Length: 139
Ligand SMILES: [Zn+2]
Image (cartoon, rainbow, N blue to C red; front, side, top):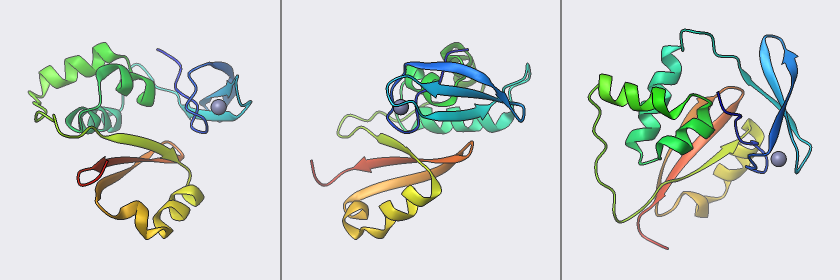
């Protein structure tokens, strides 16, 4: 399983840093931030299957899903095949995503301009929230 990205600076240079409360802890090399993710057992929780398929439908690539959720892109490809998921073609816009903690999420939502002209979906991800956003009507 690949290391996840830093939820603070999105860097991928993270190193394992022990296990705390049954969760793998990581340290981000560039910004020295510590964070943890749920340790996945042999049987991957259906929670992750659902999340992976959601992301896939949103147009996020297998590799990106691997980085976000920490499940291999091969697993994601297998689930897509197994559940016969077909993502709609998206040529006009591409989703972006942010990983925020609760405070950051609330701050983001406070600004009306952040919500205008865009569609978004918020999904829980470990102890953080992921916001997927599509901008349709502006650059
Ligand atoms: Zn970082």
